[in-house]
Length: 452
Image 1 (spheres, rainbow, N blue to C red):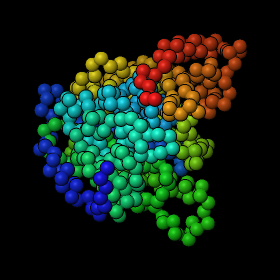
Image 2 (cartoon, rainbow, N blue to C red):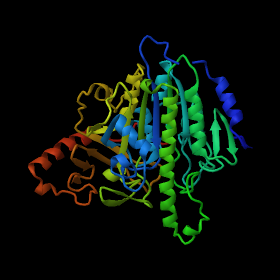
Image 3 (cartoon, rainbow, N blue to C red):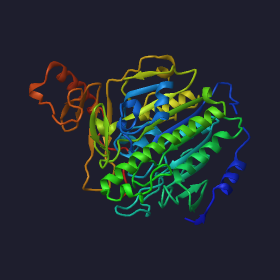
Image 4 (cartoon, rainbow, N blue to C red):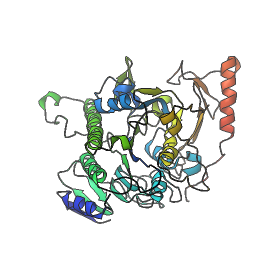
């Protein structure tokens, strides 16, 4: 990997702008909206005001809820790579997961399908999908994953395509295949600079912009908006206090950057022609405590309870999706892949079994979204013999694990008291039967296995 130090992104932006085709609406006979997908890295519902969060002010994200549909029961896995693979492919882990930091090169993504349907595709932010690594190392590929181009993206501005470096100050970024260290720059702002340039091009094709943010994942550091560590007011802070303060500043930065994208879309006059999705990949770090609904909750990243897997999901499309809606439908981030395919009039991948289900009929027509359970297989690092897989089926009220533990999530959202089968009520017994049937229908082992 070639790395050179640069002090400005101007050169790369000029190269990027010059490489794009001249552009605007779709040349296809059917209407294809622009699609913008924002995925925040490590933020539970407790960190968003419209979900009841009280610790951090998030006015721009909250405005999305007012302008579109907010889902209150959106779920995914409690860790980044499994979620990203699930989101991009529309498939559960038993079908598509190889190992941490890897998107199998044979998996088909929404970007690839939309590109085939005429979209110009771009991605900015965190990649982390190019290949697995040996345990305890950061840069020794164990097998091949997927490059941005292979996964369907025409252009990119990314952190962690191969090596790591910083994602925040003095970031190491790969812009369309050339990796540099950008001294004096702040990675999250560079991602949005690039995204704004990408959206601003005149083009004959619609665009897909996927923005998997780096924020607010640790390391917890200051932001251009935050107070400096040298401030005497914070001289006696503990590490935990400093991390908490920095995390809150980083989420405030998330809100500002989302606002920049929304403002650019308005400035370009394309809001009515843009499907905009905001979500997060899992709960936040357990080092952080946030307040919601009058209670304090520490983050539940890695934890398979609802506090770790339930995430914000907000969808806006002015003129197509009525504003101010709330849906309690049981949905999953893997539903976004077929949603984008349907909205973009692209083709579903042939010969590939999808687990996700398009949300578009619910979003634009208000049609019922029928699903009695979601199933999950969670084993982030299968190559590690010290880790174990976990399976569960989550229904509207009850959740059943592969070990037989059943929880009533209305009464026990933290999953502290498994229900005893011998004392099941009629409702509990019926739920156990339905959820066990879903577990029984899951494949017994992963379709893709890690190499020896």
